[in-house]
Length: 260
Image (cartoon, rainbow, N blue to C red):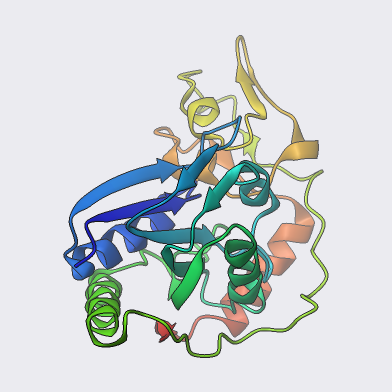
């Protein structure tokens, strides 16, 4: 039995966090320790020497978020087993899992399993929903099932072998981010500061008005999701066209897949 499970994740809208927690629940292991990198500006410096790690990220255009890679630069492991989780917005996870595998292995983790789960797309709106309200109850049950399958694998063969993880190496070219950010409606905004408090790249400041440094925005839309007054919205014409494409082509429900 695993005595300790380390949950290492980047999760601006808490969907990735929800899935890694449910996988851990399915594992039914011992102590659970959280390492939430979402607002950890200086990154995580730690060596993992025991237990099992569940490493979770949202997929950004088929890749691992660069901000996650920056925040794990100073972590390492001594061969402890790791489960990888990529959460994508019902389009495709492409090369995110193989990239995450390569990163985890380079840090000293022994990858024993990987899963691709679905969460509400960051561009989703009530008028143009894309995997709205996911992960839902069915996703939660499947995450727990994945955890139980991992536990069974560990009991049967110590988790030595891992099924092939889909994706390409070299990875697809990384889509450039920056220059586009959600905007604030001055009529609705109460200057409460929620948007600044949830921004994982710390590009929002609130004083007499809300100012966003769009150059470093990763368009996770946490500020949009958590604004209590619904005063934030992503309205850029390029994003409107992309949103329409996603609604048109990615509205059929996809289900989680895992690789053992």
